[in-house]
Length: 107
Image 1: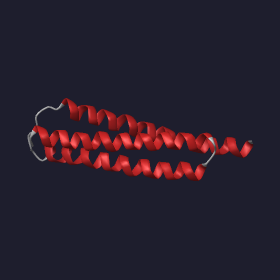
Image 2: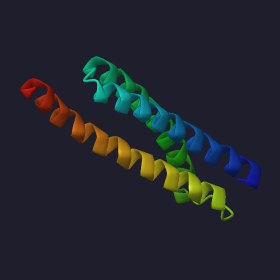
Image 3: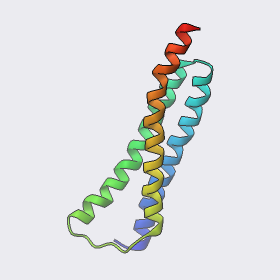
Image 4: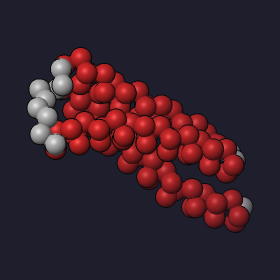
């Protein structure tokens, strides 16, 4: 795999993960107003984007595991870091939604 192809995959990971973060920003706004239907829609969109980013990353990992040689790419390392960070944010956000539902019910 050449540097251009690695960069292309890295950008797919970064862009899709970034789109997922934008969906999380939208979900945060919706959560603040207890718009749980809006939260769920934004989370579905975030999940779709994270899956696209994850699939791009996994494709690279599978190719390398199969023996294909790659040059080190700082951009791909950044892409993996971006994906991991936003995926963790998504996971944490999903854990907060039930808490807000309880707050709304009490309130």
